[in-house]
Amino acid sequence: MKLASFATGGPARPGLVVGDRVVDIRAGAEALGVSLPTYDDVLAIIDAGPDAWEALEGFADRLTSERFADGSGTWWWPASEVRFGVPYVPRKDMIAVGANYWDHLVVGYSRIGKEPVAPPYPELFTKRLTSLIGDGDEIVLDKRSTRCLDSEVELAVVLGRAGRDIPAEKASSYIFGYSVSNDISGREFNIQHTPQWTRGKSLDTFCPFGPVIVTPRELDDVYNERLRVRVNGVQTQDCPVGDMLFNVDTLIASLSEGLTIEPGDVIMCGSGPGVGFEQMPQRWLLHDDVLETEITNIGVIRNVIKQAGV
Amino acid sequence: MRVCSFRRDNDVRVGVIVEDHVVDAVEAARAVGARADLLADLRSAIEAGAEGEAALRAAVGGAQLVGPEHKVALADADLVAPYRPLQNFFVADGNARLAGGKPKETIPAFAYYGRAASSVSDPGAAITWPEYLSDEVVVEPQLAIVIGRPLQYASEDEALAAIFGYAVLNAANAWNLRAKHAQLMKSGSLDSFSPWGPWITTADAVADPDSLRVELEINGEVVSTGSTGDAAADVASLLREITTGITLRAGDVVILGSTQLVGPDGPVGGYRVSGDSVVGRIEGVGELSNSIGDRY
Image 1: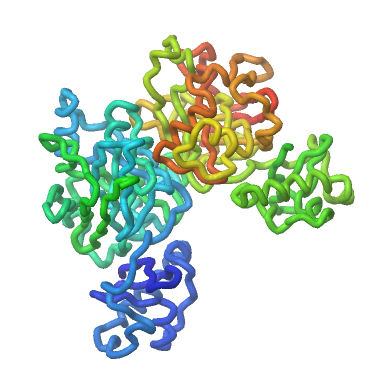
Image 2: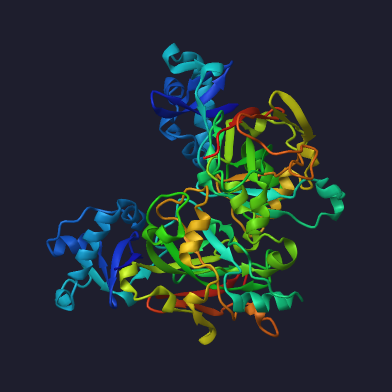
């Protein structure tokens, strides 16, 4: 299933995306006479655990095209007519991973005149929750903080169970689903200001996330999907999700060493080549640029850059 | 004013500390007709801004009116962490003025990192970690700055006016994980690595947050003393710098960073082992005791 938080003018509520339609889970279950618990938001669904997920998957399976003969505007809407928000706000930070794609770090190192070195262990850092935005929200370029605005499409792994010291071979059972995220960066902070990534990547609006969370059964193999970014329609990033140096299982194992992961925690798995920092000349995002962040068969987040004070 | 969270009848309650007693804040606020509904937990009370703070102050005023069943001697109180923040403790690492022997003006910038909220722990609690992961754990008191009002592109005056209060965070770090992961998050984010409290001393009761004596006591011996004034960035300029692009919300907690120079190159040599006791004291703010538990 594909879960989302969506709004049709009123407050956001949890929905299922079926093809090009969005189903209000509560209203849809009522309309079709299906008994489901009431969930206030997507995080409540993640918290509810595997039996509840299975029940929702069953409901999603019943949403075949003939079910949509009527009910538009009451329990389902064309996806083009709703607004997708951040799927949910995690209980702790977005956990991100630096330097996890070889082709990305090779160019990154060359820009600072160094030989590339693959990190021996995952470079895990936090992105503050105040940086989260959803599809359609604006990314603020405020020159008081950064002039070197850059973007990095990343697979967001949504965790569904609590655990600690999880061996890699058991890690996949902790995955609830996958989503799209962009690790927006103010490069001055990353290059000159500090060797720690969190500062320049935690600025307000610097974490587009969404528009949907896809459960693993929806994808043949997430590693075969592609990470893509388009700026004003021109593709700047395009590489296989599976090119990561540390795969998802290894990242979960490493993060959970001595640290309890919780339902709803998110790991952003790093980005591939083609970011603005790598280009010659370097290409930063500017006012009115349209940024599309995509992972194939998961979704696209569209955000426009707005310079503060313009 | 000092406010805390304490365990009472398997429930965590907000307390105000008056004359060496912890007084149930909800009961005390009720006694004077104040907004007890804002005091369900300390984080919510602080998030409620001026109204929440007013309710806490009213509770101090009402402390004399509540029955003995609603107060407990501070020494006997089961204090817990003030609260678990909604996101990471944001730490200005490398903020020690004398870090690596460098004079203040040559330190280029802070290496910020986040201590995951799940690392939060209680006063008195044992600090533990998996045996396979580290035998290089250090612990030091750091000043926790509790934000009381939203801050965005704040001036230093605005930043100081928005501080709710201060507490002690006994920051544990697994030194080997700093190099292992290159990013500092994991080093400070293991479960139990961020005990804080034991209470929050409100900003009005701390005359100058930049000249507070900081003491680290290990196994009954003071092994290091310093001052919050040893930080390269004072509290106000640190918040001004962070809020240049990063909004801080009421209830967020910023950590001033190390002023003690623990670690392999600092004056406090050696790593903590099972059975060690660690006390962090920050003058006028609080004293926080923890122990090192068995590794697992």
